[in-house]
Image (cartoon, rainbow, N blue to C red):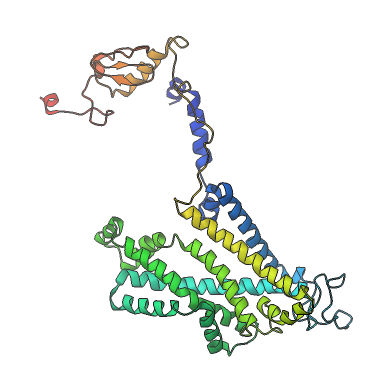
Length: 413
């Protein structure tokens, strides 16, 4: 083994190819949807994705660290000494973003509102994905009357304006207002009902498209169960567009939650901080010149929606080959000079190549071996290359693949 490695002819390009193979091995983390897209994105698409991820991750970190970042509670109107906060106070040392008409600290309300928004998004997206994907998978695979009923219900729900449907569901679930978790659940479920048809229609269309594929039919032939076919073969291939829909729906969920709060159907102000409610209370303040009560909650909504939307749009562009930006030419792996052997510089190259060919014993008798390692039949020699005939001991007809000998009936006779 060591002698074979020592006698093996190598060229500069071989080492570069091996380096690329090693660098090309990826961990499971690099195969995640967003991480994979971040690796292949280039140009303005990568800029959009990086910017969106930075804003989104920052919002998540703010939501997690809200108790440490906010100087006051979301419903706190007094300081540690028991003194009331000034009402409608301009930004200053005590309150960096000022106070509202109710005496709440604007900075604290915005920080705590980030946690409320993130929790509502997670609940809404998880519930809508679970229900929409499950219904779309079953409906698309089995079809029949169940599929027709699901399609009719989804179309009926989809025809309603999303905000109007969310208001209706909020009134039915919680009467319009409720406590922290009750309000978040009510808002999340209201948003869930709005977005279930989108996931349902997407998954159903993909399942109908791929359920007649050859690999699905092969799974049926070998006796795979229906559940295994649906979960292992259909689900994995039908959910590739979900990251794009998830991000776009998350930004819409933020706007729907803010709309519910602005119209008075969201979470009670003493139960949790909610940006839509703060905007509702600041409408009269803006006309009086108190801009800070509306600017900062509105800016928070714009930033988080912008971040999630940038992620969604960049993922959508990367998923579509027609919109995907192309990478520029990278480093050249090798050239003809790197993979060639000059007979004048290496006089014994032909003998080395022939020794390797003799060891393999896969080339027919009467062929000639040229310096590049190729073989030609009929005793022809390539001009400018060193050649050497192969001994008769290695004779044998060449197979159709050009590598392995093929045994004929004449040989047996």
